[in-house]
Image (tube, rainbow, N blue to C red; front, side, top):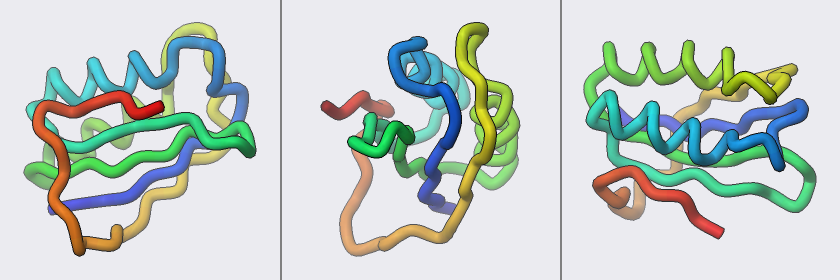
Length: 90
C-alpha cells in the first residue's frame, strides 16, 4: 500500500523530517519526506497497511517541538518507485 501525506502546522525547523524518517525506518517503510516552501512537510510512504496506519498516528503526533494542525493522507501518484530506506529530501 502507498500513500502521499502533507503535514500542516509548526513542522519546519523542529526536527520533523528527521522524526518522520526515523519513524518510517523503524516501521520498515519505503519513501521520502521534504520541507515545502509553504511551510508544510510533504512525503510519500509505502509498506504494509498496519505499518502505514502506525506511521499516520506518529506523524499526527509529531516530535516534541512540533505542533501538527492537520495531516492530509491521500492516494499518491504511483508512476514511480519509492526509495528504500526512507529518505529525507531537500
